[in-house]
Length: 135
Image (cartoon, rainbow, N blue to C red; front, side, top):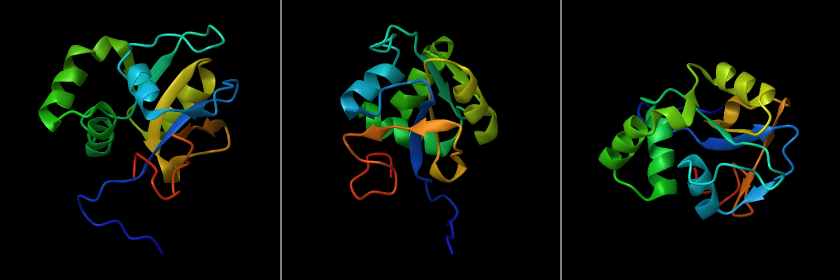
């Protein structure tokens, strides 16, 4: 039985729509995508970044790791780039947006994943594997 302690970060997973052929991405490339520095997938589709609620501690901790930023730098980034991504108000809404938007990519709690999206490997690792970046 899993038990989450108050304040304990959830493990985040990177999910993409089912039509996306990218199955693995280096952490540095993922950071570029999430920072809107990379705007297209290799197949030419536009990238749509979908984040959970911007105030989410889980999102902020994941971005701190990916972007190598302090908490304040992440907050500043989110405010200054709010037009670069879509914010979902629940894991279900995030998954629905990723599922229905060609080229979408999102960060979601690993235990919210459904079969309607693909989970992307980061640096060759899936969520729950030892050494996974967003744990």
